[in-house]
Amino acid sequence: MKWFSHNPYFTYLHRQRLHILRVTVALTLCFSIIELFSLPHSSWALVSTVMVMGNLPHVGGVIDKGWQRLVGTLLGGLWGLILILVAEPLPGVVPFWSIVGIALALNATFSNRYGYSSLLFCVTLLMVIGDGNHDLGIGLWRVFNVVLGTLISIVVSMVLLPQKATDVFRFLLADNLDKLARLYHGHTKAEREGVNEGLALVRATSAQLVKQRGLVDAVAQEGRINRADIEEILSFERRMISTIELLQETHWNTREGHEFIEGLDGLRDAQHRLARALGTLAFQVRTGQSIELTVTPFDLQRYADVRNVESRNGRALFSPAGYLWLNRELARLTEALGERLALLERLPSQRLQRRLPGHGLISDARRLFLPEDPTPGDTAAPTRRENSAGEHHSSVSEAPASDDSISDNSSDEPDRHDRHQPDSAGNETARKDT
Image (cartoon, rainbow, N blue to C red):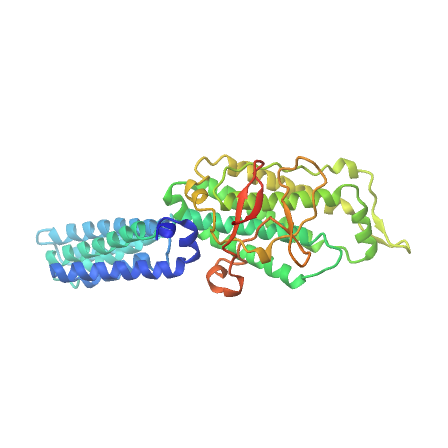
C-alpha cells in the first residue's frame, strides 16, 4: 500500500482503472450527502459530478473544468436571480435580458478558452428562470447542487490517488523521445528493415504529440510548467518529428549511395552519439532528474568538399548536402530542447526519483541497440550488456509504443526486477537486484 499511495508510476500505469474508482467514489459520496440531508433537486449534483470528472483522469483537467463550471454556474445563477428579483417587470423584460445574456455568453465561446464556462452560464441561467414561474427557491437549489457536485469532483480527484497531468505530459514526451531515438538509429541501417514498424512509430509519435497538446490547459492549471514553456517544448518536439520523417524519406535506394554515406568520415559515429543523446534525454525526463545533456554538433565544414554521388555508369544519384543538413538540424533541435528543459526549475521531481526503482515503464525486450561510442567522455553513452544468447542490449530505454499500451499489452509486461539508475554522467545504466 505504501508503494503506490503516492506513486506517479503506479497511477500512470493504472490510470484508467483508478479514474473509474475515483468517479465511483465521488458519486457514492454525492449520493450519501443527498440522502443524508434530503436535498431537493439533487439530480443536478449527480450530473455535475459526472460532467466534471467525465473522461478526465488527471487533476489538472478536473480542476480546470471544475473551475470553469463553477464560474459559469455562479455568473449564470446571479444573472437569473437578478432577473427574478426585479419587482413587477414589464412583459417580456425577463425573456429579453435572458436572451441578451445568452448571446453574450455564446459570443465568448469563440473568443477565449473559457467556452465551457460560457456554456454553463447559459444552462444555469435557463435553469434559474425556469418556465417563467420565477421561483427563487428552485433557482437557488439548482445553483447549490451544481456547486456541490463540482466541489466533490475536485476534492476526490485531488485526494484519491491523484493523477497529475504534468506526469502524463512528462511520460508522453519521454516516450516520444525514445521513439525518435529508435527511428533515427533505424534509418542508418544498410537494409530497409522494419519499414512497417518505422511507419507505425512515426504515426505513434504524431498521435502522442496530439495528446500532449490536449494536456496544455491541464498542465498549466497544475502550475509546475507555464503555458508558454509547454508550447515551446511542443514546438521543438514537432520539428524533431518532422526532421526525422524527412530523414526517413532520404534513405538511399542503391548500394552506391549506402557505401558513400558509410564512407563519410565520422558521420556514423556522430549519428550514434545523437541517438544515444535522445535516449538519455528521454530517461532524464521520465525519471524526474535534472536535465544534464551534452549534444555534439554536426560539423558540416568537414564535408564541404563532398560532391554529388554518381553510380558506376555515371548517373547522378543524390546530393549529400541536404541529408547532412537534416542531421545537423536534428542535433541542433535536440540540444535546444535539452537546454529549454534544463531551464524549467520545477521539471525535476523528487516524487519520481524516490519511486524510480521498479517503476515498470521500461522493458528489457524492447531496448534500442547502439554500437559503442569510440569517442571518450560522451555524456550520452549507454552501457551495454550481453544476455545468454549473445545479443547485446543498450540501456537507452523505451516506454510503451503508445499511450494506452502499458495497461493493454500483457505481452510487454516489464521485468520488475530490472533497476535503472543514472551514473555520475547522467547516463542510464542497468543492474540486477541481488
